[in-house]
Amino acid sequence: MNPFYITGIVPEPFFCDREKETCWLVQTLENKANVLLTSPRRMGKTQLIRHVYAQPSIKDNYFTFYIDIYPTTSLQELVLFMGKEIYSSLVSKGKTFIDRFLSCLRSLTGSFSYDPASGLPAFNVKLGDVQSPELTLQEIFKYLEQAGKPCIFAIDEFQQIARYPEKNVEALLRSYVQQMSNCQFIYAGSNRHILENMFLSPAKPFYNSAEQMYLDRIPKDVYVDFAIRRFEDAGRILTSEAANLAYDLFEGHTYYVHNLLHNAFAYLDPHAAVCEQDILKTLSDLLDEKDHAFSAIMNRINYQQKETIVAIAKEGKAVGVTSVAFVKRHALKSPSSVQYAISSLLDAQLLTYETAGRVKIFSVADRFFEKWIIQKY
Ligand SMILES: Nc1ncnc2c1ncn2[C@@H]1O[C@H](COP(=O)(O)OP(=O)(O)OP(=O)(O)O)[C@@H](O)[C@H]1O
Ligand SMILES: [Mg+2]
Image (cartoon, rainbow, N blue to C red; front, side):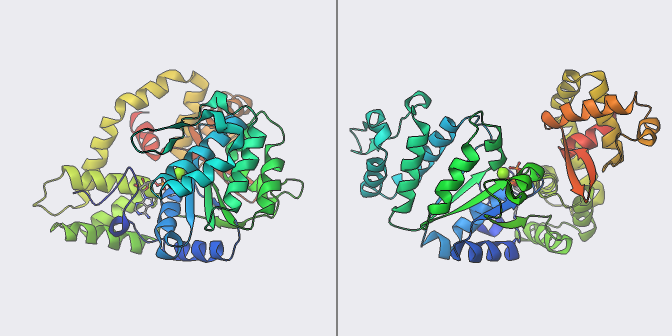
């Protein structure tokens, strides 16, 4: 069995580190504070939340809920996602819990049916059934307040609510959250800029309403040690140089390092020690595998976007992208064309950026794509 999980929930012995973060999160939630959790994409937010939920002091004492609202574009969908999540978490707890929940959802009463086999009501509510989302939302919050156990509700990709066409969603949610004494919220997301703006500007409804955590890479010594041990447990050898190289190739960006080692574990000769050469070969195979998908992206974007993303990939972390120097260095058309291309590439989530003071540092969002571009162009 491959100890480097790249899909699903990473179970305990294969979950690496995050000890400090887990401890802080558990304590903060137990102290009844809400949390804003941000990180670059694929650094490990979702896994961390799942890991926190699996801690005995949380698992035994709380109802925990988790939704990823990235696909949602309206309050109606948010309400549906919340309702479905609560229902499906309660199913295993039995009829009493489900009945309690459904009896709160008066606005949806007509939409439940009973499964004759189990005798349990089925939550087959459709989007169109949520006709008064504000009312249903109120009922959901009412339920959370009297669920019978304290609750923790994580809403991942929370910045999405800023895009809903309904103008008052932030204020509406905030007004409910503020009144809750039985439910803590974890707001998570990778769009640090939008999220911080929601929580740090005094004019915004969520201002100052959550404790903040920024999730960074796992420290190198910890990850390298973890990786070597996972090979050892399987009776195999990963050399320290190879583990260090895997980490450095992606500067410790969790998912990419992990995926690389997943493939190394899966495809290399189990009887030979894995050394640096093998890691490079694994990476090159991995990029070959993705060749078709990456080519399709390049095929879809226009020339200006292409030359801009290539320039940024080559710099790795690009600053001053609309300066004359940057434009000259990469033989681009003009600062304004770069600016335009960048804004559409950000929208398409092909680029990402972090800020250091007032400086924006751009990079290619998918680190494999970045490596592929460098190789091809
Ligand atoms: N602590 C960990 N131990 C082992 N693997 C991890 C850990 N954290 C993250 N991973 C690996 O990285 C992958 C991405 O993690 P996760 O989905 O939690 O990131 P994310 O920050 O939520 O990403 P996104 O922004 O795309 O939602 C996981 O599928 C897993 O392979
Ligand atoms: Mg996630």
